[in-house]
Image (cartoon, rainbow over all chains, first blue to last red; front, side):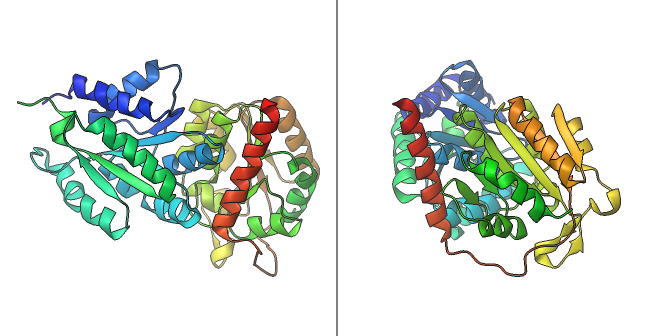
Amino acid sequence: MSVSYENSKIVFQGIKDTGVTSLSALPETWLGLLLQQAERDPDVRLIQVAKEEEAIGVAAGAYFAGERHILLMQNHGLLAAINGIVSLAMLYGIPLCMLVALRGHWGEPYPWHTRGGIVTEGVLRALNIPFEYARDPTQVRRQIREAYTFSQSSLSPVALLLTRDLMEEPL
Amino acid sequence: MKRAECIGMLYPDLEDKPVVTIMGACAQELYDLGHRENFFYLQHAMGLASSIGLGLAVHLPRETIVVLDGDGSVLMNLGTLATLARQRPRNLVLFIFDNGSLLSTGGFESHTAGGVTDLAAIARAAGIEHVAAVDSVLAFGEAAIEAFARRDLSVIVARVAAVGPNHYGMDLQLAENAFRFKRWIAARKAAEAI
């Protein structure tokens, strides 16, 4: 299985469409090509964190500074960031536009990803975080733009789940 | 020395700087000196004050960002020291008040009690070049002056007594604090742009 170069480019274009000036991220396989593009882009500051919860703080700082920011993480990173999402972003009304690589779901060959994948949607529902699945490269730019817009208007965390259909090359 | 003495010494210098403080005693002691629109009190989410500071610092290069942190909070997010070192924002000063105690939640000893864990050493080993460890008010003041003059990422670990205020409470809602803090920054940016 390999990560889709073409679709990574489309997702990155969708990120750029929002006018972001910074991204926070913890690298993971499906996000790798996206992050390479971000590193090469002089108009985007890429802030790589050591653990995803830090990115919630970084996003809050960017928001306070009046800048547009998107978070990139794996779904297991979302699980690791929950206290920051709840007790910083939700508590203070800080928008978060999170693009989340949905590992451990349909087609997942690796056992270690499966529990996180199985619980992700349920956790998002429990936290009342609006989410959508991104599967179709012809739709994902619109989905990113709408996720960003909704995060700003609702002052809420919003998650767009990047699926295997989108992020991996078909067999 | 007491944290309140240190914050009192810093207070005049905080008038024109975005300040992020952790919860509990530290927030209350700052608030009691007189709230300012440029103060953000992170009343929960322990560990993320310096991450907020990083997000501010990278986007506000003309401001000096001040973070008031504590040993209990930093221990919850040690990775932040490595992230800060790697990003190296030149306009961020991180004060860590180390009282060796989880004071606000009952006073249990933290890992730094008795010198078991050395946060200044951790910060240095994380790759932060300018780290000071101080245990007197005089040394704290000197380290703060140096840090503000340096224009480089600086960490000051101040050993303080495990004492806090005898009361808690603010006339400020959490979301209100966030909105007003954001507006203060927006006004500063607008004034700069003129």
